[in-house]
Image (cartoon, rainbow, N blue to C red; front, side, top):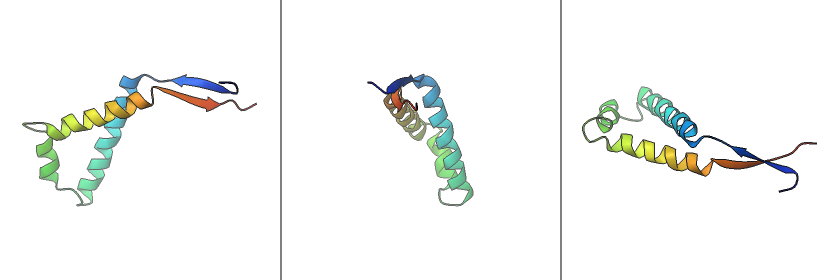
Length: 74
């Protein structure tokens, strides 16, 4: 693409960053009383369904951002 350059990212690194962001967001919601602390902590416990879902979402979004394009400025 003329006037554009490709940007590639490591999807594993991006997925970890997204996972960290989800954790911070959830901690904020728990601290504000929007999300029940026990429910959030239980979701990461025995069956790990919330933890699995978090990683699945992070990997999916990271894969979509593996290649992006930016317009060349000048």
